[in-house]
Image 1 (tube, rainbow, N blue to C red):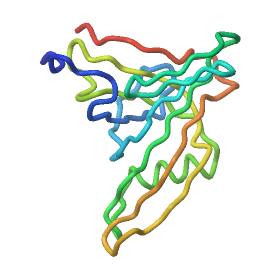
Image 2 (image 1 turned 180 degrees about the vertical axis):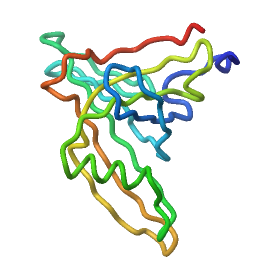
Image 3 (image 1 turned 45 degrees about the vertical axis):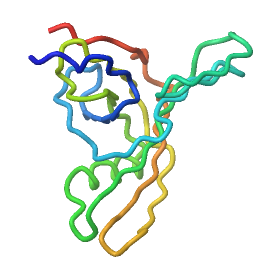
Image 4 (image 1 turned 90 degrees about the vertical axis):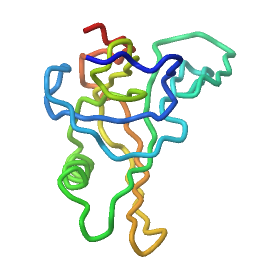
Length: 154
């Protein structure tokens, strides 16, 4: 496998992947997204995001993670990824999500994993050709898989 780009940081060119198989064992499918502030981590008054900005005023309790992103699709042909994400949102289905700064299999790649539900879906059509869907993925409270950061080693 290729090595991750030198100096790549989670936040540079973030890519979001999902799998319907929980526990991190399933094949991952890329979701076409534009990430603004991708990962927010909160411990009461603690906030950080994908680009590394952080404001910490108190460390208490377990962190609560969420991922915010904008999915972009061509109008009229959103395809199977759009259909899968929409169905997961409507049904409240838990999926395994992985956020990386490039190809998910690159050695040295830092990956953030979370099992969660899409808790918000805001669909707009900013121009005639594009469907923009703002989503927020929140950790599933009833899931035992711990959200984590990991580094691809092989």
